Image (cartoon, rainbow, N blue to C red; front, top):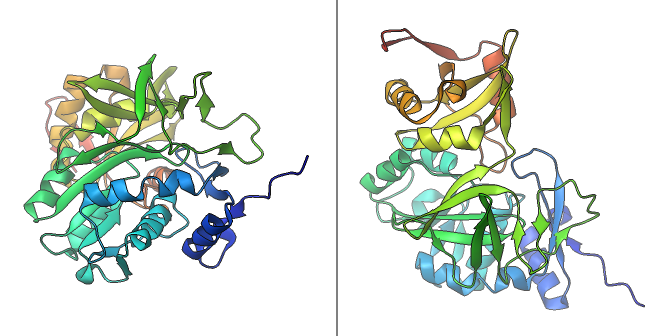
Length: 345
């Protein structure tokens, strides 16, 4: 039996977008390396059609056509950015290097926070946000600045799962079937990948006998909408208790006006201390109150820090490893909570 051709490694190509279209014409599968939430590199294999079948739907949801100009500041080594580039080309839109020339932008929440801080996006720009959970405060700031915000949930292995248009709740993406089993989000759709190249079974992607797939993200239905809490295996062991980072951040994001990231830092007594890091000192008090109201004592951040800017991975997500190292080295301002509930730097 003749073996199928090896998948085209898009990231090994000088021009990943052009390599995608060449693979599409030749009917070859593509390979994309991704670290996901674990910082362990894996290679996801998929058909080009698993992306192409979503092009028109994304264009319709985001109001993108041949007159659009799209700003994608993140590297094409990140799956969401590469998809955005080839999707823009599919509908005839231009990809522009300058945010001031953009009618549309594709950003992670952290990249959006930086763009809002610098004021590079003009009023009326449509921004598609992906790659992480977006806080209500960040959404509100974007809307106040005149942006048209869309946010979607997906994964490199699953592609699109749910879409939030104009600040509405996450609705299941057209063509996707979704169910929640034991708290995990499982989906079946034409957008799924084929799995990992040289799969050793250690990756988060799992399949059910009836064709549903999960990467272990935790979620729930709330009023018919999908609420995503994040990857269930991202934990910090502190004083013998495993604290799921996604659960803590889900509570804090409800009160966050800026950017908040939760990390674990080595501690001689606890093993690791749960730390919350923000960029706006005024966020600390309301976030501490949210933690006190929504988390039991073992899961509340024990330390609060303020940094000028959250370090970012090349893919536009918070660099949690670098951030934890900064805290461990004392390279951030700690905010100390007193028993009275007041805060001081």
